[in-house]
Length: 69
Image 1: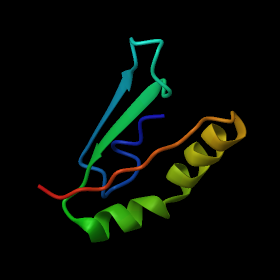
Image 2 (image 1 turned 60 degrees about the vertical axis):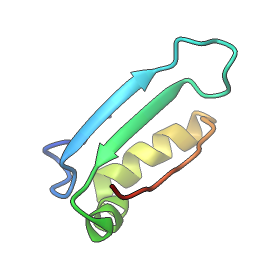
Image 3 (image 1 turned 30 degrees about the horizontal axis):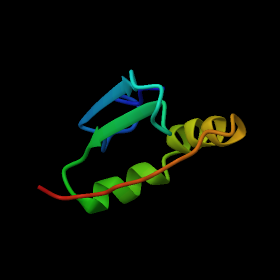
């Protein structure tokens, strides 16, 4: 599901698999953007919307955290 190179505002994308079976979440996506405007543009990108729909249909639980450094 990596969209780096597909969604122009996405600078970096990393996917991690949880190795602790006692935790609630299985996968983490860490996406890096230049600023919040680029994040908003990515959220509406057709390929991101398609990927999000796949996860939604799979019944995947979601938690989202946006932060600036």
